[in-house]
Every structure is written in C-alpha cells, then in structure tokens.
Amino acid sequence: MTTDSTSLDRLHDIIVPPPVPWWPPAPGWYWVLGILFVVVLVLVLRLVLHWLHNRYRREALDELARQKTNLADVQRRATAITAIAELLKRTALSVFPRESVASLTGPPWLAFLNRTRGRAAVLSDDTGEWLEAVAYEPSAAQGLDEQRARELASFARDWITHHRVDLPRSRSCDEESRTSSSTKDEEERVVC
Image (cartoon, rainbow, N blue to C red):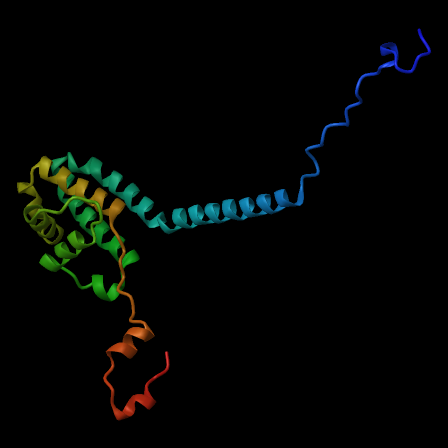
C-alpha cells in the first residue's frame, strides 16, 4: 500500500444511510387511516341496518316458499292461495301505515299492490280477481289451474322482494309559507 492520500487504494465504498422505516408512519397517514376507518364503519353500519330493515321480507319469503309446495296439490291449493293473500296483506301492514292498507279490499287492494310493486311485474286483473275470490271463497280455487297459481305465487315473491315504501312527505315550512295567502292573520301563523 502506498501512503499517498490520493491513491485509489485508500478509496472506500460510500456509506449509505439506513432505509426509512415503515413504522411509525408520517402524521398524514394517521389521518388517512382514521378517515378510512370511519368510512368502513359507516358502510358496515348501513349494511347491518339494511339487513335488519329487510327482516320482514326474508320472513315473508320463507313463508311463501312453504306455501309454494302446496300449490301443486289441488286439495291444498285453496289453502295455499288464501295463505299467500294473507301473507301479502301482512307484509304490506308491516311496512305501510295501517290506516292506508288495512281497509283495502278488491280493486283498491289490487291497485295498491300494483302501485307499490317496485320492479315486480304488474298483477293482471284476471289473476288479481282470482286472488280476491279465493281469499274470501276458498271453493273458487277448484277452477284455478296450477299455471295461474304459480303466476300468483311468482307475483307475490316479486312484490315482497321489490316493493317500494314511498310514504308521503309532510310539507315543509317553506312550502307552507309560500302557499299561504297574505292576510291580517299572518302574524298569528304557527311557527314550524
């Protein structure tokens, strides 16, 4: 070895600093993880609430599946159709206001089912009349063929699965103030 300080023999490798560790992260990553946690928590909560809110649908579909086996048997068909009609009414009563559903029978009931059907197929008038007739007079099921009974069960399944609850909204204070007329009693208006 030479003692010359400019000699290449005395040259050493470059000392690299240690790599930046992954932990602890920078403060910005704590914010990102916190926001991500809140978003996931909100999504999970919404899914759980949606699942709980649709419990009545799952129970009604289970009951409908039990009744579908009775539709093939001519002797039990009237009982099954009566149970399906009752199931539709019970399902509607569980989500719609009792005052608007409980008293419906005949064409108003069928119109209600078609109006709230969501994506379900429209209940034909002929099938709806059979539903009403068999619900109140079980002996009318003798003239009902299996195809029509299956069509009725299919409509019931679709309605239970897809019906939409669109309750009328109350008028807001702004709407009430715009629609009210200008009179001397404006000072006495009820504050919303």
